[in-house]
Length: 155
Image (cartoon, rainbow, N blue to C red; front, side, top):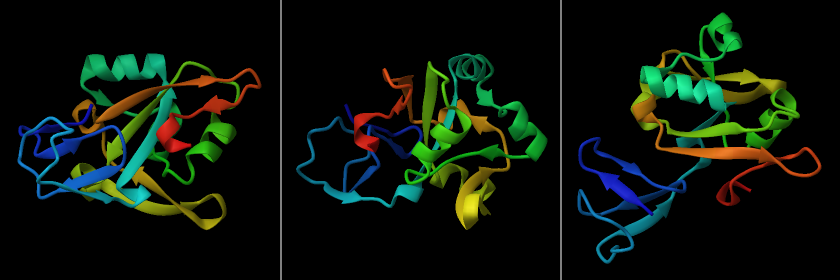
């Protein structure tokens, strides 16, 4: 279900779509007055983490990052285009992961797009991630071949 929150003044939705010309609060599919616009993948960034890390973040209200994030001074994120490679490279064989979907706009002032892996630009968050800035969380499991299964709308 799609949900737009008047309190946060930003969309909460299940796919990287944006609706314009909409009332400030409504439940979809009542979109008669709205126009759907597909956004660029970079407007939603993704963070993979363990279920235990996410549970800890929820209990504290913010995610500080994994030990390698803390050592680097920023939280590593992926884009839609780099997500599968990130899972394969950094999370091979790990099951019971969480995938955080984070809109860039609310945290844009603390995001830097920096080159990594062959010059590809990756979003790095130079701040703590508030759990309120995460609009969707998916479980990521392994298939019978040990490959991570992404949510259907990200495949």
